[in-house]
Amino acid sequence: MTAKIIDGKSYAEGLRGRIAGHVQRLKAEHGITPGLAVVIVGYDPGSQIYVSQKAKQTVEVGMHSEKYELPEETPEADVLALVEKLNRDPAIHGILVQLPVPRHIDPNKIIATISPDKDVDCFTPASVGKLQIGLPGPVSCTPLGCLMLLRDTLGSLAGLNAVIVGRSNLVGKPMAQLLLRENCTVTVAHSRTRDLADVVRGADIVVAAVGRPEMIKGDWIKPGATVIDVGINRLPAPERGEGKTRIVGDVEFKAAAEQAGAITPVPGGVGPMTIACLLANTVTTASLINGLEPPKDLTP
Image (cartoon, rainbow, N blue to C red; front, side, top):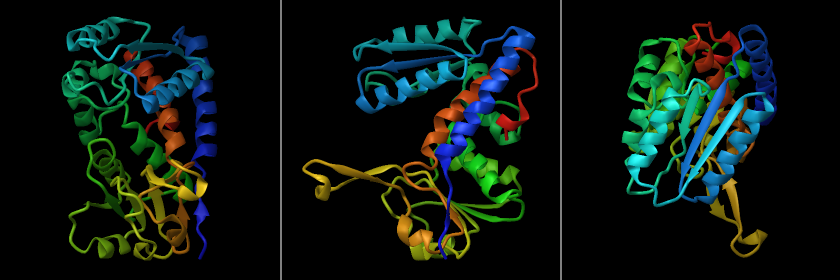
């Protein structure tokens, strides 16, 4: 069996097109321009590229974008003050503080200061609680992207056995909640799960988010299963030249593709969905803040 390749890049492009349509309707019918503010402290090359892409795509779909680049030595109190200012700004509907932050800044304190109404990353305790009990609001960007790809690939997920490998607050735990809401039977596994290979072999859906390169072997995959690989790992690639690297996921892709019914590649699978879902969440928060129903095609 050769798996269908789930093209996250193409899906994200279509999603951004839908988002742009919703933005135009909010502007035309309600005079609302969704606004996203991104705060980055210090200079991390990877974070800089990521934040620039967020700002670029925000503008491309017609939203208002603000980017705050603060020096590495910025005091924690100044970052908190900026977040509080953005909380009060009516032109801003989504606030994202790019992690990691410098060591002298407590990320949990920063996150807790973001207004839950503007928490487009779904990191605050209030946002996590809303997801847990099914209240309307944004959903963590990467899990939301995974869910969209699963629905597009499989249609109804009801009754399927889903195994999530990884229990992080960023992906594993919110992914479990979303799949429970889809009426899947959900198992959250991790690096210390006994007989992990056998657990994975029982899954109709595998979501790999453990952060270990190619940890999930191809022969662990049930024939016909759908595999969503969230991992992004860099490995040495001396064949490409000195100091060169290659990017792999948490799944042994080539071998898994021989077993699976459908699988996301790395790169080009889940990655492109994350920023697109951040934009979708900003439309959701802009709608909710103004007492409007969020677009159904952007929410779980």
